[in-house]
Amino acid sequence: MGRVALVTGGSRGIGEAISKALQAEGHTVAATYAGNDEKAAAFTEATGIKTYKWNVADYEASKAGIAQVEADLGPIEIVVANAGITRDAPFHKMTPEQWSEVIDTNLTGVFNTIHPIWPGMRDRGFGRVVVISSINGQKGQFAQVNYAATKAGDLGIVRSLAQEGAAKGITANAVCPGYIATEMVMAVPEKVREKIISMIPAARLGEPEEIARCVAFLTSDDAGFINGSTISANGGQFFS
Ligand code: CAA
Ligand code: NAP
Image 1 (cartoon, protein in one colour):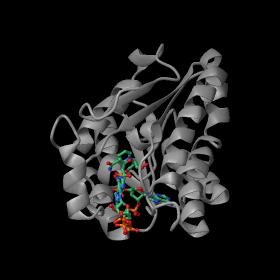
Image 2 (image 1 turned 45 degrees about the vertical axis):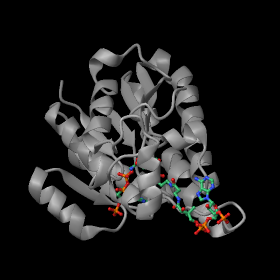
Image 3 (image 1 turned 135 degrees about the horizontal axis):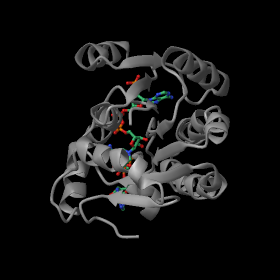
């Protein structure tokens, strides 16, 4: 059944693959982005998927953007909170700005994305919420105190939402990707990246489509009894 789906950070990287996978499932997708207009325009040109620009760290902008999407496409029944950033530094070098930017985008951004959509899902008695967490929220990571805190926080969010939404036909789940071949991972210095890959049993980075397939499953009507769970897709790097 075709539904309206919102994917934050849906214009490139993992989000792009998620947007395309949901479109392939027959859903009408809205993909958001922060500032890379060129990439967003190329993405819309290639896929026909509408893009919307707002900063997920800004509650009022998120609320207004979501209202615009619903005016254009109809009520949002699937939401994928995917937008995220890194500001890596060992803790003794991490600045308060690096801490706040990551918390505001990756954690508060998830609240800002789901909160305006949630009441409509409750009223209609159906919803699918997926948050893109990370292996590093499960195991921690050198130089990622800020990032790991947000990604561990995502798991608390979905486990709580699962309990609140279950009686209203809403599920909330997380996907924890391992290291995936996107610009985020390519920004890690090459030598460090090679060392990371050598620690992955699959001996390679994951592909964005391997995460998108998890999301397509969790957002399907068939996944209604899966709630508050976490799918780890990390090439065997970590078990939880
Ligand atoms: N474990 C233990 N020690 C480490 C380490 C590690 N993983 N990485 C670096 N160190 C050590 C270094 O060897 C160095 O030791 P010495 O002082 O004894 O020489 C010390 O820590 C400091 O290293 P640097 O001076 O190189 O630190 P820096 O300030 O230049 O920071 C860095 C470099 C930011 C840590 C860089 O190495 C880096 O980007 N690392 C990768 C971090 C990472 O995995 N990020 C994930 C990004 S992708 C993502 O986040 C997606 C996802 O969800 C999976
Ligand atoms: P990416 O390639 O850097 O793409 C990030 C996307 O998020 C872009 O569309 C970007 O928009 C958008 N975005 C960033 N900040 C935003 C903001 N403040 N408001 C709105 N949109 C914003 O990242 P990725 O690797 O695909 O990662 C996607 C998600 O997966 C993140 O939450 C990340 O933490 C998580 N994850 C990634 C990996 C990995 O290995 N890549 C592993 C585990 C988890 P612009 O194009 O406009 O910049």
